[in-house]
Image 1 (cartoon, rainbow, N blue to C red):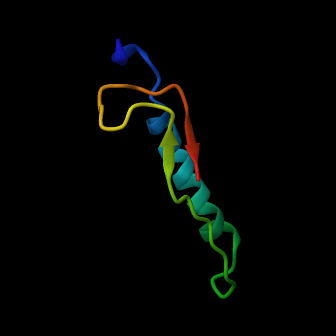
Image 2 (image 1 turned 45 degrees about the horizontal axis):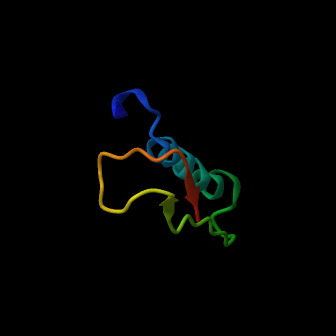
Length: 59
């Protein structure tokens, strides 16, 4: 029953947005800083959209 599980990709999305705000809120506009999340990876099956994975890894 996928509707009863917590989807870690949905949980990871606002975390990524908050990471991006670190630079905009804490670093001067004239300074250089970069925070990158280059991917979200799961342990699960590729191409099966109804499978909710137990965990994700941010890269």
